[in-house]
Amino acid sequence: MTTHTRPVAIAGAPAPWARTARGANLLGDDGTLGITIFEEITALAQEHSAINLGQGFPDEDGPQEILDAARAAIAEGANQYAPGQGLAVLREAIAAHQERFYGLRVDPRTDVIVSTGATESIAAAILAFAGPGDEVLTFEPFYDSYGAVIGLAGATHTTAPLLAPDFQPDAAGLEAAFSDRTKIVVLNNPHNPTGSVFARPVLERIVQLAERHGAVIVTDEVYEHLTFGTRHLPIASLPGAADRTLTISSAGKTFSVTGWKVGWLSGPAELVAQVRTVKTFLTYTSGTPFQGAVALGLGLPGEFFTSIAATLRKKRDLLGEGLRAAGFDVFEAEGTFFTMVDAAPLGIGDATELARRLPSLIGVAAIPVSMFCHEEGAERTRSLLRFAFCKRFDVIEEGARRLGTLRERV
Ligand code: PMP
Ligand code: GLN
Image (cartoon, rainbow, N blue to C red; front, side, top):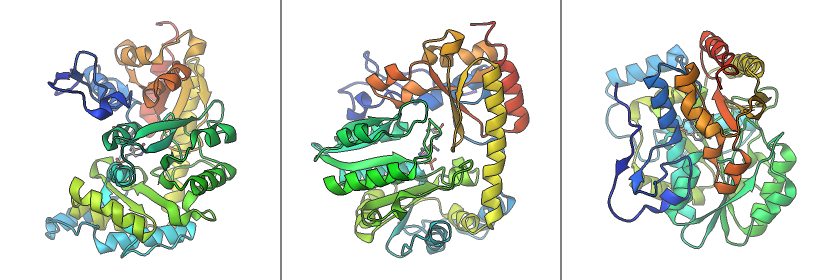
């Protein structure tokens, strides 16, 4: 088995992103290049044949018709470059999806681009609008790539904390985090890793503040169809938001195809054109045979979308029961693939240390939440762990059984 857990020594000055993200490729003091926390924990899980409740990927395939469509596209010769903007059939399906679910009208010719996962849309949007001297505001904990790309852009990363127990931004903290140098506010709703879904008044406040400071809103909504009880509300649909908002999503979570890396971004044509220019020089274009298949997926009946959320909710509940029985304090997720827990009731203060031991100790893997934070936020989240519940029911059951043995082993 190939694993890449060992850091690689590199010569020369540290890359700018190395100092900006704890969870993303931290460059060690000894000049070694690390890897992401997700890769590190997945490699440890493989090494110890552990149940991987760390990295967020489903362990079952998505809808058969989508998989068949990708195979057919390859067989039929859709194997050369797609247009840089993405295949028209997919851009049209994205526009139709935004209208069907949210009443948002976007022009598939000018307001949409297809990207290599949501990750590339995030990177291209940040690189398009922020540079040295600018601030990019994210909520904290934040998804690792935001910190890394803000560093690559040479911009300053500012944060507004999401605090227990509900992990909603608080109004005063949010206002204080904005400044006239804030070029972009990045939000992630539903939120990884806390599982929170931002309430409407919070979204309205973000729009007001972005307007006041002239900031672009970049919203990462990859978990848009994975909410439990609340309906997803895209920030772009709020009054005053549409002309400054870039909305990003991905096929990975909705259709259980994280390996396809098909994502997209939509918004006003002038902003989208600037992102597209950056995307052109990052990858130019993204996987042709997958695009038609994803278009098919976006057009599936409503029942598909409600049933994936309902199944995932049952998985959340099953894992939640196991985690509570194991002695953790559990923060119930309102959306995403993830449940966050506090290990403090088990007498564990350092969840990072625990996450590194967990695969060998009990054969389960999880991600420490402090890796989604800067130093101060890391201190605040030191005892928190994130568990993924996007796994088969029997896998979650076995994971819960193993977690039940933790108390006697720590
Ligand atoms: N944003 C968030 C919040 C995520 O959790 C992930 C991980 N899947 C991504 C972006 C990346 O999405 P993709 O794999 O489509 O690049
Ligand atoms: N989005 C997934 C997670 O949060 C995986 C991300 C990754 O491996 N970069 O776990």
